[in-house]
Amino acid sequence: MGSIDTTIRDASRPVEVENLVVRFDGRTVLDGFSLSLDAGEKVALTGRSGGGKSTLLKCLMGFVPKFQGGIRIFGEPLGPATVWRLRRTLAWVPQEPDLGMGTAREALTRPFAWRVNRAQAAAMDRAPALMERLLLDHALLDKPVSTLSGGEKQRIAVVGALLLDRPLLLLDEPASALDPESRRALAALLGEQEHRAMLCVTHDADTAPFCARCIAVTNGGEALNHG
Image 1 (cartoon, rainbow, N blue to C red):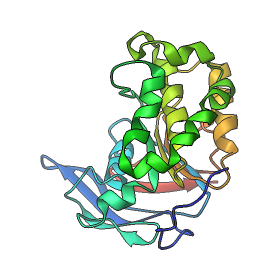
Image 2: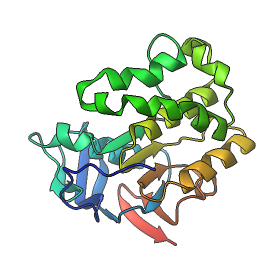
Image 3: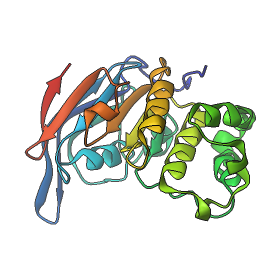
């Protein structure tokens, strides 16, 4: 299930972060943070609110233009000249997904209207099966996104990310609005994505059992590793 983008320089190292320093308005959010992620590896990022976990994901997506240190995505340095191409290797699930206007079906199909994704439009055929895995009724596809609950939006966002079939998945509290049964369903599905590397921000590592490694981000960027 899925394939790796042929433009990737080094598929064995989805993420390499070295001595990352990020400051906003004079406040240090990340201070000397380092991390490496192997192919297919799934890592949970935990720590207090405001500790820099979500900022790290935004850095990896190129949404934080000013930082010190180095970031490599699949072996290639992240910078102004590479950011748009490197974004094609990853998918992002935010804590509060903005699914736009229209129905859930339209939210899922919209990315395939973009030129870079058009060749994958047939992936929409997989949407019903993925929804079933996440305990979502097919009828949800034709409901306006404005009527969906927070948990339904989160799961639709996960479906959309998996349909894009990128080799790197970034998740920011993907289960925060889910009940225990839905959390278990999400964890089971994500755990099956053997070819896909993941970084998952969570306040509680127990909600991300699909992650084999946990990193506690503390004191503005100190990384404490736990197996």
